[in-house]
Image (cartoon, rainbow, N blue to C red; front, side, top):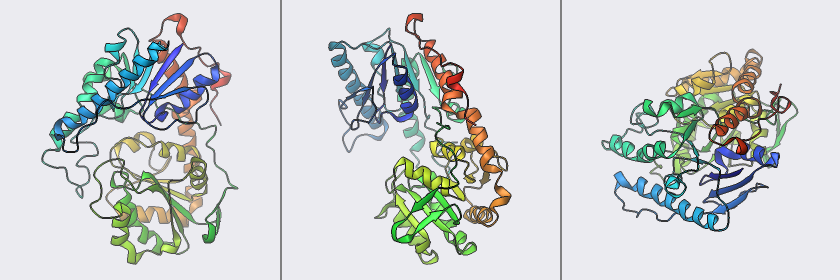
Length: 422
């Protein structure tokens, strides 16, 4: 089978699936993206350029569509060149959110497309307007609806859609639902296990082990959508209650979602100014973005991991931390409740109450034995519902095969190859 995967930041959600397809040795895989060449053996990577980008002063109601249409036509131009060199896909996988799939049916009307539907922009019930500290503008309902032009165009473009969680699928209109199946991209739980012997060197700050009192916070970027401001307000309260606790913070200083901070230095600098005189900075270690293996080492080291988010796309990091048997205190919002049950697989707390967050984290740090059942239960839940090989891969392969003729279908993984990790 010839497979085309389209994702501006390839491999994105397709990393594990692409690796598995390569391992079968049965398929030719071409990937289209905008970033530098990813290190993935067995995949031909083609970097495409958007055909056009909107001007800096572009009209707010149409600028996102203009950007996405430029991506989509840039993909078409790249695909035309690939076809001229002899590659024509039997199946296309891709993320719909940046418009990259929009015009592919005009190029290849008979090639089936399976699109990843991550999020429908909501004026109510999602990230916009959830936190009164960051109120929505009077125009946000119109701007959000205008951004969904890409989703509306692509539900017609694709032959089948996928969403990783029920909550994310349900952000889309009900008219979309029959065309979208729900299955997570998958978590490699065979690789993500706890390690009682883990250690971490912090240079001059010393080396930490599981015997140290460590709590952690992680986000791709330190921003309000992932509750960074609430974490920082809880930080001095945790330190006051636990005078020997050390805190490790992972995340960049940019903004992935939502508006940028108006202050120089971003949200980290803004929050440091707010709480700075109440924090012992010698016990706080901001590591920025770290390699994946270091991130895993830090989560395995953590006595209590903090995951905060507004109602938005569920982070891989929550499920990964659960797979590594972390004891997690997380914000009590619908997408988190889908993956975690309070008191059974983690601890849920009010997003808007830093004092309650601090109290729960402090109690876990003080009495880890009382919460020792949460981590193993969290791993069991993730293995059962989100493991890539035993749960997600068979579902994705089955759905892909519904779009392919019999002679092109992907061989289903054998029972031995899909056994769930312990």
